[in-house]
Image 1 (spheres, rainbow, N blue to C red):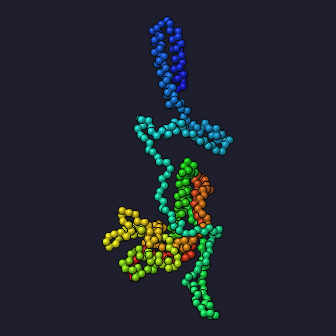
Image 2: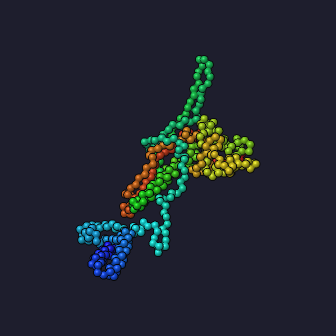
Image 3: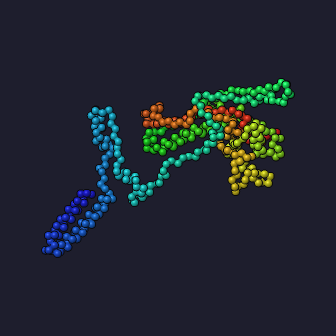
Length: 386
Protein backbone atom coordinates (compact mmCIF):
# COMPACT_ATOMS: atom_id res chain seq x y z
CA UNK A 1 0.00 0.00 0.00
CA UNK A 2 2.78 2.46 0.91
CA UNK A 3 4.70 1.67 -2.30
CA UNK A 4 1.62 2.34 -4.45
CA UNK A 5 1.06 5.73 -2.79
CA UNK A 6 4.73 6.62 -3.31
CA UNK A 7 4.55 5.72 -7.02
CA UNK A 8 1.42 7.82 -7.56
CA UNK A 9 2.97 10.81 -5.79
CA UNK A 10 6.13 10.55 -7.93
CA UNK A 11 3.97 10.40 -11.06
CA UNK A 12 2.12 13.51 -9.91
CA UNK A 13 5.42 15.35 -9.42
CA UNK A 14 6.54 14.42 -12.95
CA UNK A 15 3.25 15.57 -14.43
CA UNK A 16 3.40 18.89 -12.56
CA UNK A 17 6.98 19.40 -13.77
CA UNK A 18 6.00 18.81 -17.40
CA UNK A 19 3.06 21.19 -16.99
CA UNK A 20 5.43 23.95 -15.92
CA UNK A 21 7.62 23.33 -19.00
CA UNK A 22 4.76 23.26 -21.55
CA UNK A 23 2.44 25.84 -20.00
CA UNK A 24 3.48 28.47 -22.53
CA UNK A 25 4.23 26.43 -25.63
CA UNK A 26 1.53 23.83 -26.15
CA UNK A 27 -2.04 24.25 -24.93
CA UNK A 28 -3.18 20.79 -26.09
CA UNK A 29 -0.36 19.04 -24.22
CA UNK A 30 -1.16 21.12 -21.15
CA UNK A 31 -4.80 19.95 -21.27
CA UNK A 32 -3.71 16.31 -21.50
CA UNK A 33 -1.35 16.68 -18.56
CA UNK A 34 -4.13 18.31 -16.52
CA UNK A 35 -6.42 15.37 -17.10
CA UNK A 36 -3.64 12.99 -16.11
CA UNK A 37 -2.99 15.04 -12.99
CA UNK A 38 -6.68 14.85 -12.00
CA UNK A 39 -6.69 11.10 -12.57
CA UNK A 40 -3.57 10.61 -10.45
CA UNK A 41 -4.97 12.84 -7.67
CA UNK A 42 -8.14 10.76 -7.49
CA UNK A 43 -6.09 7.59 -7.42
CA UNK A 44 -3.97 9.00 -4.59
CA UNK A 45 -7.07 9.89 -2.55
CA UNK A 46 -8.50 6.37 -3.01
CA UNK A 47 -5.22 4.79 -1.92
CA UNK A 48 -5.04 7.02 1.16
CA UNK A 49 -8.60 6.13 2.11
CA UNK A 50 -7.87 2.43 1.73
CA UNK A 51 -4.75 2.91 3.83
CA UNK A 52 -6.86 4.32 6.67
CA UNK A 53 -9.40 1.50 6.53
CA UNK A 54 -6.96 -1.37 5.96
CA UNK A 55 -3.54 -0.83 7.44
CA UNK A 56 -0.73 -3.06 6.35
CA UNK A 57 -0.98 -6.52 7.90
CA UNK A 58 2.10 -8.06 9.46
CA UNK A 59 3.54 -11.11 7.88
CA UNK A 60 1.62 -14.15 9.07
CA UNK A 61 3.55 -17.16 10.29
CA UNK A 62 2.34 -20.60 11.22
CA UNK A 63 2.78 -22.05 14.70
CA UNK A 64 5.58 -24.25 13.40
CA UNK A 65 7.40 -21.29 11.89
CA UNK A 66 7.13 -19.35 15.12
CA UNK A 67 8.47 -22.33 17.02
CA UNK A 68 11.51 -23.07 14.89
CA UNK A 69 12.48 -19.38 14.73
CA UNK A 70 12.29 -18.89 18.50
CA UNK A 71 15.58 -18.48 20.33
CA UNK A 72 14.70 -20.89 23.15
CA UNK A 73 13.86 -23.57 20.56
CA UNK A 74 17.25 -23.11 18.98
CA UNK A 75 18.83 -23.45 22.42
CA UNK A 76 16.85 -26.63 23.04
CA UNK A 77 17.83 -27.97 19.64
CA UNK A 78 21.48 -27.24 20.30
CA UNK A 79 21.36 -28.99 23.69
CA UNK A 80 21.93 -25.92 25.84
CA UNK A 81 18.37 -25.94 27.30
CA UNK A 82 16.22 -28.67 28.86
CA UNK A 83 12.91 -27.53 27.44
CA UNK A 84 11.42 -25.13 24.94
CA UNK A 85 8.31 -23.05 25.52
CA UNK A 86 6.97 -20.70 22.88
CA UNK A 87 3.82 -18.66 23.31
CA UNK A 88 2.21 -18.15 19.92
CA UNK A 89 0.69 -14.69 19.57
CA UNK A 90 -2.66 -14.53 17.83
CA UNK A 91 -2.65 -13.02 14.36
CA UNK A 92 -3.89 -9.46 14.00
CA UNK A 93 -6.40 -10.32 11.33
CA UNK A 94 -7.97 -12.96 13.56
CA UNK A 95 -8.43 -10.48 16.36
CA UNK A 96 -10.01 -7.97 14.04
CA UNK A 97 -12.28 -10.62 12.62
CA UNK A 98 -13.33 -11.81 16.06
CA UNK A 99 -14.16 -8.31 17.23
CA UNK A 100 -16.44 -7.69 14.24
CA UNK A 101 -19.95 -8.96 15.08
CA UNK A 102 -20.96 -9.19 11.40
CA UNK A 103 -18.98 -10.97 8.72
CA UNK A 104 -18.50 -9.59 5.23
CA UNK A 105 -21.68 -9.41 3.13
CA UNK A 106 -20.54 -12.41 1.13
CA UNK A 107 -20.28 -14.42 4.37
CA UNK A 108 -23.99 -14.03 4.87
CA UNK A 109 -24.27 -14.68 8.65
CA UNK A 110 -24.64 -12.66 11.82
CA UNK A 111 -22.95 -14.06 14.91
CA UNK A 112 -25.24 -14.92 17.83
CA UNK A 113 -25.24 -12.56 20.80
CA UNK A 114 -23.88 -14.12 23.98
CA UNK A 115 -25.22 -12.85 27.26
CA UNK A 116 -22.37 -11.86 29.63
CA UNK A 117 -21.64 -14.07 32.62
CA UNK A 118 -23.19 -17.40 33.52
CA UNK A 119 -26.88 -17.93 34.12
CA UNK A 120 -27.13 -19.69 37.50
CA UNK A 121 -29.55 -22.47 38.18
CA UNK A 122 -32.40 -22.26 40.66
CA UNK A 123 -31.37 -22.11 44.30
CA UNK A 124 -33.59 -23.25 47.14
CA UNK A 125 -34.04 -20.55 49.80
CA UNK A 126 -32.24 -21.61 52.98
CA UNK A 127 -34.13 -20.58 56.12
CA UNK A 128 -33.96 -23.30 58.80
CA UNK A 129 -30.53 -22.45 60.18
CA UNK A 130 -31.69 -18.95 61.07
CA UNK A 131 -34.31 -20.36 63.45
CA UNK A 132 -31.72 -21.50 65.99
CA UNK A 133 -29.23 -19.52 68.08
CA UNK A 134 -25.60 -20.16 67.17
CA UNK A 135 -22.84 -20.66 69.73
CA UNK A 136 -19.12 -20.59 68.76
CA UNK A 137 -16.91 -23.26 70.34
CA UNK A 138 -13.20 -24.05 70.21
CA UNK A 139 -13.34 -27.81 70.79
CA UNK A 140 -14.53 -30.83 68.82
CA UNK A 141 -17.27 -31.70 71.34
CA UNK A 142 -19.93 -29.81 73.26
CA UNK A 143 -21.79 -30.53 76.47
CA UNK A 144 -24.90 -29.17 78.13
CA UNK A 145 -26.94 -30.04 81.20
CA UNK A 146 -30.60 -30.77 80.54
CA UNK A 147 -33.32 -30.61 83.14
CA UNK A 148 -35.39 -33.80 83.32
CA UNK A 149 -38.86 -32.39 83.86
CA UNK A 150 -40.45 -35.81 84.33
CA UNK A 151 -38.39 -36.38 87.48
CA UNK A 152 -38.77 -32.91 88.93
CA UNK A 153 -40.68 -32.62 92.20
CA UNK A 154 -42.11 -29.28 93.26
CA UNK A 155 -42.31 -29.54 97.04
CA UNK A 156 -43.53 -26.02 97.66
CA UNK A 157 -46.55 -25.91 100.01
CA UNK A 158 -48.18 -23.81 102.72
CA UNK A 159 -46.92 -24.86 106.17
CA UNK A 160 -47.97 -24.07 109.73
CA UNK A 161 -45.75 -22.04 111.98
CA UNK A 162 -42.94 -24.15 113.35
CA UNK A 163 -43.77 -27.12 111.05
CA UNK A 164 -41.32 -28.97 108.81
CA UNK A 165 -40.77 -27.25 105.47
CA UNK A 166 -41.17 -29.59 102.44
CA UNK A 167 -38.30 -30.50 100.15
CA UNK A 168 -38.40 -30.45 96.37
CA UNK A 169 -36.04 -32.08 93.90
CA UNK A 170 -34.77 -31.33 90.44
CA UNK A 171 -33.25 -33.93 88.14
CA UNK A 172 -30.53 -33.10 85.64
CA UNK A 173 -28.98 -35.07 82.83
CA UNK A 174 -25.68 -34.34 81.10
CA UNK A 175 -25.79 -34.37 77.31
CA UNK A 176 -22.85 -34.48 74.93
CA UNK A 177 -22.44 -34.01 71.21
CA UNK A 178 -19.64 -33.96 68.68
CA UNK A 179 -18.72 -31.57 65.92
CA UNK A 180 -19.29 -32.86 62.38
CA UNK A 181 -17.51 -31.86 59.18
CA UNK A 182 -19.50 -31.09 56.04
CA UNK A 183 -17.30 -30.77 52.94
CA UNK A 184 -17.65 -30.40 49.18
CA UNK A 185 -14.92 -30.80 46.51
CA UNK A 186 -14.66 -29.91 42.84
CA UNK A 187 -11.90 -29.71 40.23
CA UNK A 188 -11.46 -27.16 37.47
CA UNK A 189 -8.65 -26.67 34.98
CA UNK A 190 -6.11 -23.93 35.52
CA UNK A 191 -6.87 -22.68 32.02
CA UNK A 192 -10.51 -22.23 32.85
CA UNK A 193 -9.69 -20.52 36.11
CA UNK A 194 -7.30 -18.13 34.35
CA UNK A 195 -9.47 -17.44 31.32
CA UNK A 196 -12.83 -17.29 33.08
CA UNK A 197 -12.67 -16.06 36.68
CA UNK A 198 -16.44 -15.76 36.68
CA UNK A 199 -16.63 -19.52 36.16
CA UNK A 200 -14.41 -20.16 39.19
CA UNK A 201 -16.57 -17.82 41.26
CA UNK A 202 -19.67 -19.62 40.05
CA UNK A 203 -18.24 -22.98 41.11
CA UNK A 204 -17.36 -21.54 44.51
CA UNK A 205 -20.92 -20.37 44.95
CA UNK A 206 -22.20 -23.80 43.97
CA UNK A 207 -19.85 -25.48 46.46
CA UNK A 208 -20.82 -23.16 49.29
CA UNK A 209 -24.51 -23.55 48.50
CA UNK A 210 -24.13 -27.34 48.43
CA UNK A 211 -22.64 -27.39 51.93
CA UNK A 212 -25.32 -25.09 53.36
CA UNK A 213 -28.06 -27.13 51.67
CA UNK A 214 -26.88 -30.33 53.36
CA UNK A 215 -26.72 -28.56 56.72
CA UNK A 216 -30.28 -27.31 56.29
CA UNK A 217 -31.63 -30.79 55.53
CA UNK A 218 -29.68 -32.35 58.39
CA UNK A 219 -31.00 -29.85 60.94
CA UNK A 220 -34.49 -31.18 60.21
CA UNK A 221 -34.19 -34.83 59.17
CA UNK A 222 -30.69 -35.91 60.26
CA UNK A 223 -30.83 -39.30 62.01
CA UNK A 224 -27.77 -38.80 64.23
CA UNK A 225 -25.96 -41.90 62.95
CA UNK A 226 -22.30 -41.80 61.95
CA UNK A 227 -21.39 -38.32 60.75
CA UNK A 228 -25.00 -37.15 60.53
CA UNK A 229 -26.51 -34.50 62.75
CA UNK A 230 -29.45 -35.36 64.97
CA UNK A 231 -32.24 -33.23 63.46
CA UNK A 232 -35.37 -31.87 65.07
CA UNK A 233 -37.56 -34.60 63.51
CA UNK A 234 -35.39 -37.38 64.94
CA UNK A 235 -37.02 -39.48 67.66
CA UNK A 236 -36.59 -37.88 71.07
CA UNK A 237 -35.86 -34.40 69.70
CA UNK A 238 -39.51 -33.32 69.53
CA UNK A 239 -42.79 -34.09 71.25
CA UNK A 240 -45.29 -36.08 69.19
CA UNK A 241 -48.67 -34.37 69.13
CA UNK A 242 -50.46 -37.61 70.09
CA UNK A 243 -53.84 -36.11 69.18
CA UNK A 244 -56.98 -38.22 69.29
CA UNK A 245 -60.12 -37.59 67.32
CA UNK A 246 -61.93 -36.42 70.43
CA UNK A 247 -59.21 -33.80 71.06
CA UNK A 248 -59.98 -31.93 67.83
CA UNK A 249 -63.68 -31.11 68.31
CA UNK A 250 -66.48 -31.60 65.82
CA UNK A 251 -65.70 -32.02 62.10
CA UNK A 252 -61.95 -31.76 62.68
CA UNK A 253 -59.56 -30.47 60.01
CA UNK A 254 -55.81 -30.30 59.58
CA UNK A 255 -55.97 -26.76 60.92
CA UNK A 256 -57.36 -28.10 64.22
CA UNK A 257 -54.46 -30.56 64.45
CA UNK A 258 -51.93 -27.74 64.12
CA UNK A 259 -53.79 -25.70 66.75
CA UNK A 260 -53.68 -28.70 69.10
CA UNK A 261 -49.89 -28.96 68.68
CA UNK A 262 -49.53 -25.23 69.29
CA UNK A 263 -51.50 -25.54 72.51
CA UNK A 264 -49.29 -28.43 73.63
CA UNK A 265 -46.15 -26.29 73.24
CA UNK A 266 -47.79 -23.51 75.21
CA UNK A 267 -48.80 -25.99 77.91
CA UNK A 268 -45.09 -26.74 78.35
CA UNK A 269 -44.58 -22.99 79.02
CA UNK A 270 -42.85 -22.23 75.73
CA UNK A 271 -43.84 -19.60 73.23
CA UNK A 272 -44.26 -21.09 69.74
CA UNK A 273 -43.01 -18.76 67.02
CA UNK A 274 -43.03 -20.74 63.75
CA UNK A 275 -44.94 -23.53 61.99
CA UNK A 276 -42.82 -25.66 59.66
CA UNK A 277 -44.57 -27.21 56.64
CA UNK A 278 -43.58 -28.77 53.36
CA UNK A 279 -44.61 -26.55 50.39
CA UNK A 280 -46.80 -29.34 48.99
CA UNK A 281 -48.73 -29.60 52.27
CA UNK A 282 -49.21 -25.85 52.44
CA UNK A 283 -50.60 -25.90 48.91
CA UNK A 284 -53.05 -28.64 49.92
CA UNK A 285 -54.21 -26.46 52.80
CA UNK A 286 -54.82 -23.56 50.45
CA UNK A 287 -57.16 -25.86 48.50
CA UNK A 288 -59.22 -26.78 51.57
CA UNK A 289 -62.88 -25.73 51.31
CA UNK A 290 -65.82 -25.79 53.69
CA UNK A 291 -69.20 -27.48 53.06
CA UNK A 292 -70.33 -24.48 50.99
CA UNK A 293 -67.28 -24.70 48.69
CA UNK A 294 -65.62 -21.59 50.12
CA UNK A 295 -61.87 -21.60 50.68
CA UNK A 296 -60.68 -21.51 54.28
CA UNK A 297 -57.57 -19.53 53.36
CA UNK A 298 -58.39 -16.67 50.99
CA UNK A 299 -59.53 -17.37 47.44
CA UNK A 300 -57.97 -17.64 43.96
CA UNK A 301 -58.16 -13.88 43.37
CA UNK A 302 -55.96 -13.09 46.39
CA UNK A 303 -52.83 -14.38 48.06
CA UNK A 304 -53.42 -15.94 51.46
CA UNK A 305 -50.88 -14.76 54.05
CA UNK A 306 -48.65 -17.53 55.38
CA UNK A 307 -50.14 -17.47 58.86
CA UNK A 308 -52.08 -20.05 60.89
CA UNK A 309 -53.41 -19.40 64.38
CA UNK A 310 -51.33 -16.23 64.63
CA UNK A 311 -48.03 -17.95 63.77
CA UNK A 312 -45.98 -17.53 60.58
CA UNK A 313 -45.80 -20.58 58.33
CA UNK A 314 -42.33 -21.39 56.95
CA UNK A 315 -42.48 -23.68 53.94
CA UNK A 316 -39.37 -25.64 53.07
CA UNK A 317 -38.58 -28.95 51.34
CA UNK A 318 -36.25 -29.67 54.29
CA UNK A 319 -39.25 -31.00 56.22
CA UNK A 320 -40.68 -34.22 54.86
CA UNK A 321 -44.01 -34.06 53.08
CA UNK A 322 -46.76 -35.20 55.44
CA UNK A 323 -44.91 -33.93 58.55
CA UNK A 324 -45.18 -30.68 60.50
CA UNK A 325 -43.68 -28.98 63.52
CA UNK A 326 -44.87 -26.15 65.74
CA UNK A 327 -42.33 -24.82 68.15
CA UNK A 328 -40.36 -22.29 70.06
CA UNK A 329 -37.27 -22.81 67.94
CA UNK A 330 -35.16 -20.22 69.77
CA UNK A 331 -35.48 -22.18 73.01
CA UNK A 332 -35.48 -25.67 71.52
CA UNK A 333 -31.96 -26.16 70.16
CA UNK A 334 -28.51 -24.66 69.58
CA UNK A 335 -26.18 -24.71 66.60
CA UNK A 336 -22.56 -25.12 67.76
CA UNK A 337 -20.11 -23.57 65.29
CA UNK A 338 -16.54 -24.88 65.35
CA UNK A 339 -15.50 -23.53 61.93
CA UNK A 340 -17.49 -21.31 59.64
CA UNK A 341 -17.63 -21.69 55.88
CA UNK A 342 -14.09 -22.06 54.52
CA UNK A 343 -13.21 -22.20 50.81
CA UNK A 344 -9.72 -23.27 49.73
CA UNK A 345 -8.08 -23.76 46.34
CA UNK A 346 -4.94 -25.86 45.90
CA UNK A 347 -2.97 -27.54 43.15
CA UNK A 348 -1.26 -30.36 45.07
CA UNK A 349 -3.97 -33.02 44.94
CA UNK A 350 -3.64 -36.48 43.35
CA UNK A 351 -2.57 -35.86 39.71
CA UNK A 352 -3.57 -32.18 39.49
CA UNK A 353 -0.03 -31.10 38.57
CA UNK A 354 0.08 -33.55 35.69
CA UNK A 355 -3.30 -32.46 34.36
CA UNK A 356 -3.18 -28.72 35.14
CA UNK A 357 -6.11 -28.96 37.52
CA UNK A 358 -7.00 -27.04 40.65
CA UNK A 359 -9.06 -28.53 43.49
CA UNK A 360 -11.59 -26.34 45.29
CA UNK A 361 -12.81 -27.33 48.73
CA UNK A 362 -15.62 -25.80 50.76
CA UNK A 363 -16.34 -27.06 54.27
CA UNK A 364 -17.91 -26.28 57.63
CA UNK A 365 -17.53 -27.84 61.06
CA UNK A 366 -20.49 -27.69 63.39
CA UNK A 367 -22.66 -29.54 65.87
CA UNK A 368 -26.33 -29.43 66.72
CA UNK A 369 -28.11 -30.25 69.94
CA UNK A 370 -31.80 -30.20 70.89
CA UNK A 371 -31.96 -29.19 74.54
CA UNK A 372 -35.74 -28.87 75.00
CA UNK A 373 -37.83 -31.41 73.10
CA UNK A 374 -40.99 -30.05 74.74
CA UNK A 375 -40.52 -26.79 72.82
CA UNK A 376 -41.21 -28.65 69.55
CA UNK A 377 -44.46 -30.46 68.86
CA UNK A 378 -45.62 -32.12 65.67
CA UNK A 379 -45.38 -35.30 63.68
CA UNK A 380 -47.67 -36.77 61.04
CA UNK A 381 -49.92 -34.26 59.31
CA UNK A 382 -52.89 -36.61 59.24
CA UNK A 383 -56.11 -36.61 61.22
CA UNK A 384 -56.41 -39.37 63.84
CA UNK A 385 -58.96 -42.09 63.12
CA UNK A 386 -59.88 -42.69 66.74
